[in-house]
Length: 206
Image (cartoon, rainbow, N blue to C red; front, side, top):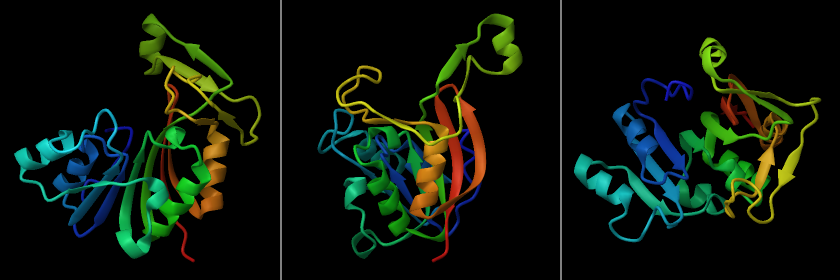
């Protein structure tokens, strides 16, 4: 939560949580004052039909947040409306068509709207720290890329973490370049921690 640096208050805002799973970040947005929260995901092994985790938490909390069985590829402002803020957390590397995903996000985020993103990134070199050195550095791994060119690794099977739902591994430069191409400006680079890149971006005005 600290690394994501979510806004402390979201009063009057409409928020979309992409890949919401059981809805932790959807309900966090609601707790921070969001007027309307929509979470989308597919009914995967974590999201069974009926009384799934989102539905159970929603009932226990008396929440007004809404879950929709929906893909990022299906987002359409005519159907979904537009949002002031979008959470896009640990989703990018699951997309077979990442630029389609980014462009669809741009369609449903209001100009100037906030995109909060966390994603796996591929790094050419990773060094694992242990013991006092790790505590001094405040982390257990550091990594870096050789060169600054945008690159994207493709995993057709289970090459990344033995998970067939993992499709791509961008480097940091690739994430930045895709955001730029889709119409976003990075407003806060929150850094790479381990193999995860955290950032805020704003939808450019047309």
